[in-house]
Length: 555
Image (cartoon, rainbow, N blue to C red; front, side, top):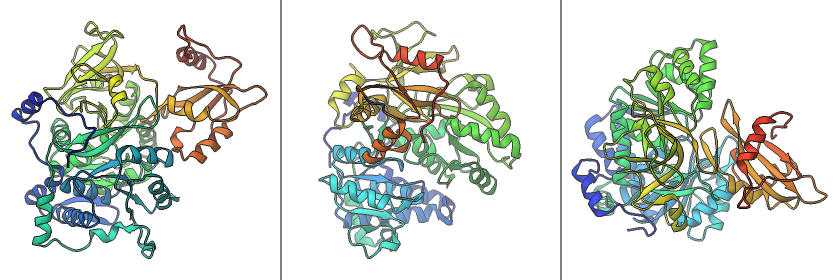
């Protein structure tokens, strides 16, 4: 059952984390039965017309786990999962945790470029997808990906009832029917994984190519979710609205879906953060908590100022994913009539929250402090030396839910982890006198577009394949809605003039996610270089800031 390529915590730290109650040796798959015992027929999960009680949730998780075994999936297998916000995704994550199968959580926006690379890297044994989302044929995409990933077995399709005669895929909905007998329960008991094993894989934004893969164990992710729920005051009266992608760590377990269920609350799923459906759901279901990125918060605040919606039940709006202006935090608090809680964290582990008893000014201008007493942080200069308190530096961290390395990526780990297991976050921060962190930027060459972190190197590698392009540099430019958008500086080949349309067509042909398509193109005669011969991106960013006019948006 043990997977190779997973970095383990040193044994003395594992013992410490158990002794201090952080790690409780509980698998994610064991939780639904505990929840059902405590909460029985109380509603747990609402997804459109589907409502599952805690008891029904536990039963469906067991049934699905048995059917996954029947399909040939076993402990130690990985499966590629690309689903929208739906109850089937929640059931699948928990069912996989029942039998030691690890879901690799992709986003609906990902296409062949990302999915094939991740599928090969993690050697997935199956793919789970939706039939179609917003008019896009995910079934066909999954089948193309399966053909390119040698290890991939069956393709399971949610909402695929119309294609039941298609023997090339498996109708996921059929796997949720029936009930478990004693023999099934014995199979499940025999398949129970070790809590120190991988429970799921999350994806990270990064500086090279497609996202890096982060292995999260049952022990560390159970603590991640439980402690987050404690810090955020989640309880049986919590009603948590999901509007961001459920495959994100923020939405899944910070505290998110799992943290809400741990606390005995209710989860309400929506496919997107569109204003009207979100406001209607808050009013109809008495939503108390939800999470959004700054771009969504801006739209909600603007709408609330005009519509005067019925949002009286909303207590806390969690905001994270990208830099959040203090002015917007204050505006959102007034417009939505709730507390605004900043969340600064990463799929690689460390989570920071502003506390709900802090004053509004502190909550608006800082990004919180770590959740665990054993979260260790250092703020260092470019030489790795700690900076004086209050000065800016790169954030390094380690702790009971921050893995010690990326999955099967020794070269990435050499760059991303310092001696002693310290994770180099790439974020530039300073410590506020309150003890909270203030995020001032980042050291990594990443563009943060509405919370989606995009590697500049990945874009450059793709665009450089155009026959019209000699050299290219991708940089961010500021945007009020998304925080940052993508600008590319291109040095053309003689006699050629690349266009944004050329780039858009290339990305569509390669199956690259839409959010990675550049919005600005600068064709130049020369690019600036540093003393060591690299493109001087600081100079380009400064130039872009000084001449940010007369540009054509993509599309």
